[in-house]
Image 1 (cartoon, helix red, strand yellow):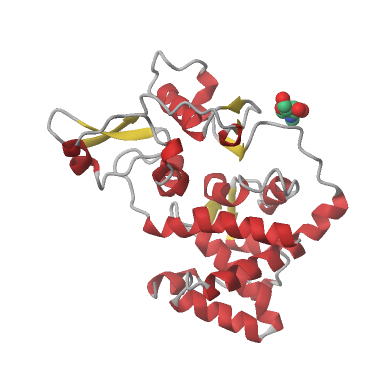
Image 2 (cartoon, protein in one colour):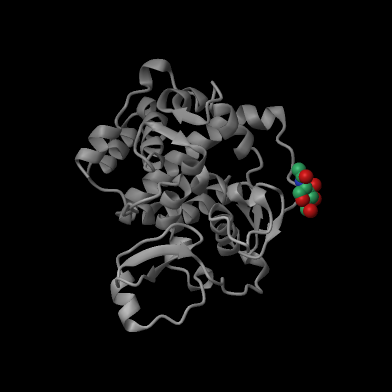
Length: 278
Ligand SMILES: *[C@@H]1O[C@H](CO)[C@@H](O)[C@H](O)[C@H]1NC(C)=O
């Protein structure tokens, strides 16, 4: 359990917090583009960026132009920044950079997967298989045989997840990463046992629901939560899939709350308040 908390906490730090700096891309609104542009792994990690000798002027024009996963900013003839498929990803020797796709194929890096996806969407000759139009990273690390999630483990999962969410929330407040309304929710949770899980569960939903902010969480919006956990927490995928009770590929606040074991009267939409005060 301890490992679980620590790991997820790190993950939250590396991905979740950075999501607050989000800018929306213009033009094509592929959900994945929206997710990935916030992804600290793409923006701040030199290993995952493309190999491109960028001159100063290029950097100026492109400085505030964010591109989605597998894309990079290029300057067009009008000296305007636009997004294009990454020309070449940094060659990756490090095993730990490998990722496993939804086709259960191991790729060298996150960059390679989304570069291919981009090329295939553009019908480029470099697209090696049509199915890669829909390729995405399922989890970090090479593909492996994942342990099956037993019924008992799955039954216990909501409890573990609630506890973890509360711990993450608490840690974020202690590190001053959660302020204002969020922090108030956390204080309220600390004071009352009955609010404890409830506030943490609702906060996490609001936190995930950003691309777009529509009170429903898609598979892509779940990515930052799921991908880093799949290997260590083998029930997470099964659990999240079953949260989508009506199987429409979107998890509503009600579905999320029920899935995490809240009572119906506890599932209140607090997201609007969260954002207004933010
Ligand atoms: C995915 O690939 C790994 C490694 O090649 C293999 O061990 C595993 O059984 C595969 N999983 C599925 C569901 O096919």
